[in-house]
Image (tube, rainbow, N blue to C red; front, side, top):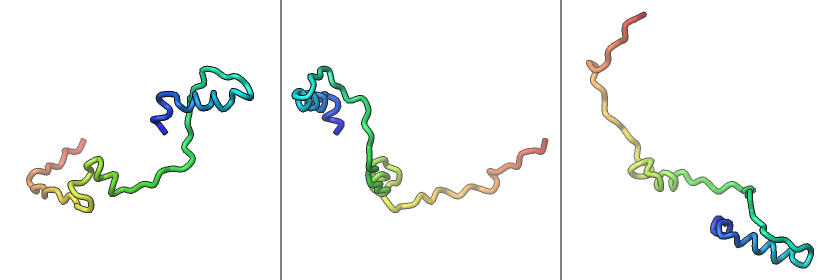
Amino acid sequence: LVAKLVPEVMGREIEKASQGIYPLKDVYVRKVKVLKAPKLDLGRLLELHGGAAAVGAEDTGARAKVSDFKEPEAL
């Protein structure tokens, strides 16, 4: 769809189709509304964006040392 919007192919098609009714020129598509949302596949999305090293793998992290934490002083 985007490939047709950029080179104004749809605008030219609209001009040709309406030529018999009313002569139009310089027809542009300004706004497009998506009626149906695409299916969301979370595994594929993570795979594309590198959200997890492997889909389904969890990041376990490293355990912090107890001596690293210092309680802030009260005001």
